[in-house]
Image: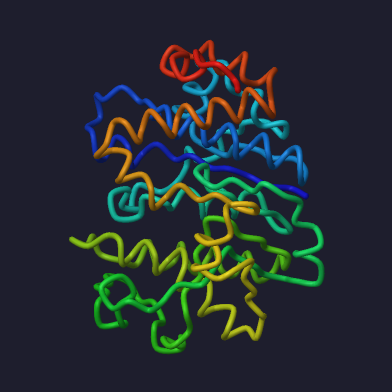
Length: 289
């Protein structure tokens, strides 16, 4: 089963300035490692699709071994008209366009602990879960300012959005249509104060809307409450915990130590390489009980 991670660094420099030194926080590097290695163990190959800055960064840390399908700088040519502040996850869409279906798209903060073959059997399109239509995150069409034509009227605004942290695309033609339509929207959109609503529309709500319009069934691995109540036996998504960690150093360090212990237990060879990264070394200097 082919899968990919992606990393487009232009949003980092949009936030931090063109002269900033690119880095990835330790917790993100550790979850990226677990995400890639557990996918390979349980499901198949995985690639990293990124730009040159990200490729050079992972190479400098000695981490390219994480992706058995290689690390590929294919995101250098994302048009400058794509607002990197508003559309910070645009790299995922361009990576999907490059990689092509059938494939699995995984965020670097998402870990799949078990084999998905049986759960994907017979499906054309799946994501981890649907989301409620919360007006402050998923507003109606009147919330979007466009400077180029884009057809919002033909979409069903009652369809629940799809969280794409883990996504399976089995239909090549539909995948190409989805990606191109999302890109068309990003190129038509005017820069917005609330970039979140624009990004999640292009990436998540539009996916569900286009599937409904094409009469392609969109399935989900589980619902959101189940994701949090399942004991993380199938999946771990760190997204909601990031802000808590950033606000509490003890939680941050505790999480990183737990990741390091899991890596030492499940992937000892990889752990030896990871602990050579100076920012990660302290988290591996603990007894494995």
